[in-house]
Image 1 (cartoon, rainbow, N blue to C red):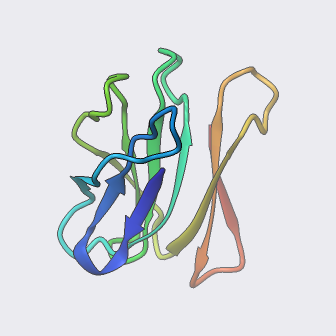
Image 2: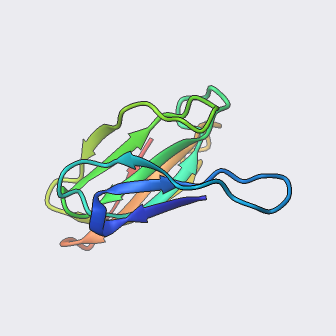
Amino acid sequence: MIIANFGTDNVGVFLGYANGIFSNQTIFSTGHHSRPYSVAAGYFNNDSYLDIAVANYGTKCISVLLGYGNGRFANRATYSTGTTFPYTINVGDFNKDNRQDLVVSGQGTENIGILF
Protein backbone atom coordinates (compact mmCIF):
# COMPACT_ATOMS: atom_id res chain seq x y z
CA MET A 1 0.00 0.00 0.00
CA ILE A 2 1.30 3.47 -0.90
CA ILE A 3 0.20 6.65 0.85
CA ALA A 4 0.82 10.25 -0.28
CA ASN A 5 1.87 12.21 2.82
CA PHE A 6 0.93 15.76 1.72
CA GLY A 7 2.04 17.51 4.91
CA THR A 8 5.45 15.84 5.20
CA ASP A 9 6.58 15.81 1.54
CA ASN A 10 6.96 12.06 1.17
CA VAL A 11 5.22 8.82 0.34
CA GLY A 12 4.82 5.93 2.73
CA VAL A 13 5.04 2.32 1.61
CA PHE A 14 3.47 -0.48 3.65
CA LEU A 15 4.45 -3.99 2.54
CA GLY A 16 1.70 -6.58 2.84
CA TYR A 17 2.14 -9.99 4.43
CA ALA A 18 0.15 -13.11 3.50
CA ASN A 19 -1.74 -12.97 6.81
CA GLY A 20 -3.38 -9.60 6.03
CA ILE A 21 -0.96 -7.60 8.20
CA PHE A 22 1.14 -4.71 6.84
CA SER A 23 4.69 -3.69 7.70
CA ASN A 24 5.51 -0.40 9.37
CA GLN A 25 5.61 2.54 6.98
CA THR A 26 8.83 3.09 5.03
CA ILE A 27 9.24 6.72 3.97
CA PHE A 28 10.52 7.95 0.59
CA SER A 29 11.05 11.67 -0.01
CA THR A 30 9.23 13.45 -2.82
CA GLY A 31 11.21 16.68 -2.40
CA HIS A 32 11.06 19.88 -0.36
CA HIS A 33 7.60 21.52 -0.51
CA SER A 34 6.43 18.87 -3.00
CA ARG A 35 3.08 18.27 -1.28
CA PRO A 36 2.33 14.87 -2.87
CA TYR A 37 -1.38 14.58 -3.53
CA SER A 38 -1.88 11.30 -5.37
CA VAL A 39 0.09 8.13 -6.09
CA ALA A 40 -0.08 5.29 -8.59
CA ALA A 41 1.87 2.05 -8.90
CA GLY A 42 2.91 0.41 -12.14
CA TYR A 43 5.71 -1.18 -14.12
CA PHE A 44 7.23 1.87 -15.79
CA ASN A 45 10.60 0.45 -16.87
CA ASN A 46 9.43 -3.11 -17.69
CA ASP A 47 11.65 -4.88 -15.15
CA SER A 48 8.74 -6.66 -13.36
CA TYR A 49 9.29 -4.63 -10.16
CA LEU A 50 6.55 -2.24 -9.06
CA ASP A 51 7.39 1.45 -9.40
CA ILE A 52 5.70 4.51 -7.88
CA ALA A 53 4.46 7.65 -9.65
CA VAL A 54 3.57 10.69 -7.54
CA ALA A 55 1.59 13.84 -8.38
CA ASN A 56 3.44 16.60 -6.51
CA TYR A 57 1.00 19.48 -6.13
CA GLY A 58 3.45 21.84 -4.39
CA THR A 59 6.27 21.67 -6.94
CA LYS A 60 4.16 21.19 -10.10
CA CYS A 61 5.84 17.96 -11.09
CA ILE A 62 5.51 14.21 -11.29
CA SER A 63 8.02 12.02 -9.46
CA VAL A 64 8.80 8.47 -10.49
CA LEU A 65 10.53 6.12 -8.05
CA LEU A 66 11.71 2.91 -9.69
CA GLY A 67 11.35 -0.19 -7.53
CA TYR A 68 14.08 -2.71 -6.74
CA GLY A 69 11.62 -5.51 -5.95
CA ASN A 70 12.54 -5.64 -2.26
CA GLY A 71 10.40 -2.80 -0.88
CA ARG A 72 13.07 -0.20 -1.67
CA PHE A 73 13.05 2.41 -4.43
CA ALA A 74 15.62 4.44 -6.37
CA ASN A 75 15.91 8.18 -5.89
CA ARG A 76 13.10 10.02 -7.61
CA ALA A 77 13.20 11.32 -11.15
CA THR A 78 11.01 14.40 -11.66
CA TYR A 79 9.04 15.65 -14.65
CA SER A 80 7.55 19.15 -14.75
CA THR A 81 3.83 19.70 -15.30
CA GLY A 82 4.40 23.32 -16.33
CA THR A 83 1.84 25.66 -14.79
CA THR A 84 -0.46 22.83 -13.68
CA PHE A 85 -0.75 21.77 -10.03
CA PRO A 86 -1.12 17.98 -10.44
CA TYR A 87 -3.53 16.28 -8.08
CA THR A 88 -4.52 12.97 -9.67
CA ILE A 89 -2.38 10.38 -11.39
CA ASN A 90 -3.38 7.03 -12.88
CA VAL A 91 -1.79 4.22 -14.88
CA GLY A 92 -2.96 2.64 -18.13
CA ASP A 93 -1.78 1.61 -21.58
CA PHE A 94 -3.30 4.56 -23.42
CA ASN A 95 -1.47 4.14 -26.74
CA LYS A 96 -1.79 0.32 -26.84
CA ASP A 97 1.97 -0.36 -27.01
CA ASN A 98 1.93 -2.88 -24.11
CA ARG A 99 3.80 -0.42 -21.87
CA GLN A 100 2.23 1.40 -18.95
CA ASP A 101 1.64 5.14 -19.33
CA LEU A 102 0.62 7.85 -16.86
CA VAL A 103 -2.32 10.24 -17.08
CA VAL A 104 -2.28 13.34 -14.87
CA SER A 105 -4.94 15.92 -14.16
CA GLY A 106 -4.47 19.05 -12.16
CA GLN A 107 -5.60 22.44 -11.08
CA GLY A 108 -4.73 25.52 -13.11
CA THR A 109 -5.63 24.30 -16.59
CA GLU A 110 -8.53 22.48 -18.20
CA ASN A 111 -6.24 19.81 -19.64
CA ILE A 112 -4.94 16.40 -18.76
CA GLY A 113 -1.43 15.20 -19.50
CA ILE A 114 -0.44 11.76 -20.73
CA LEU A 115 3.13 10.54 -20.31
CA PHE A 116 3.97 7.65 -22.64
